[in-house]
Image: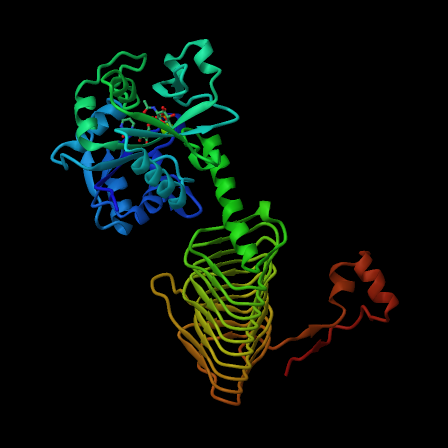
Length: 482
Ligand code: UD1
Ligand code: MG
């Protein structure tokens, strides 16, 4: 078995056409940077060495890649003088013989399977160079594959250096190559700038090798979509859509019910069990795991969330949270990091929860903020309750026991504890602990000033209605005063 000695990933370009402050290869699709997609696809070939040529934004690119690929060595191309120049640098102090795979950091749809087939064919053909080619519906911008009368590969010509006949050719250079290392070394040494961009083109080595009588082969890929390169935002969106279809297709084959796969975006690495239903407009990212029977969406976003069996997240955003089984969230709620909802807990409409543990079967049904809190089981938090966790300097914790009834519109001014089985009266501002089994009442007592409207708003519609209801304007009695 022949083996791969070196993989070179070219990732130094700025990607001017992206018009971005972020280096092109760090733009993401499906939660992974473009260059990481490429390196992942090469991983099963198990090259002895991996070299990544970095330049534009090199520090950022290095940090991103090194997080996942500890074995990567980085070659700095300080001035971007083209893919040929990048290859020259990458070969310095490298192996003298063997096989090298070269590919660009901007073709994220390549699969490991296609690279393996390409490698196997290259080894079978026993040539000095193989170029992976593709027939594409729109070859604009790519290097074109020029074949001789015998149908054999002659050379590659770039879009901007091609004549009008050559531009008609729809077989393109995918930018993926395998070379005999010794043959490539002598070819790149002979590269010259003879093109409109004033760069050394790696693509020119094919013509040079052919002229030197070496065996160069064009190997056509089966699925052109795998070889699409990203140079601008439209191509980024196009590739993201293809990746989305791949990911959603795989989930659906595994039994996930995706109602509108064109309008559902799931990152690579998200795990979803069978019989989960995902409604349109949902975006599921990070290390999210969703257990069977869950219902997500419409329009829910989950980022790094564990979702239990049969849990529902309707029109809500959840990030960095753990949701148990049979939990209900939404519509229109925001569950932030550090939230832990036990089995059967319910978060209703217009509720924000942060850094809080909410016990089994407990409910926060309407219009509330729960921050820095622990809530026991079987507890109900009345509508519009606010956990007042911030004194302007520090955050404080609120503890609520089991089977508690917090009255509507309660302010729980932390730090504060409400014991098991306790109540709070609606509208209370609770600043002191409420012992188990008590009711905390903290609000002004009501008084009614009789006839006030008839005197102070005489002639108004309210006054007329009050009269019809039998209110007496002479009365100045106050109800509720001692
Ligand atoms: C390149 C090929 C083209 C092919 C296309 C496939 C050349 C001259 N052209 O064109 O034939 O059809 O890819 O997608 O090779 N890079 C460096 N250093 C540099 C210049 C580029 O590392 O000095 C890197 C870039 O970061 C990128 C890759 O090489 O990842 C290709 O460069 P790019 O500018 O995207 O070339 P294309 O115009 O796409
Ligand atoms: Mg490109």
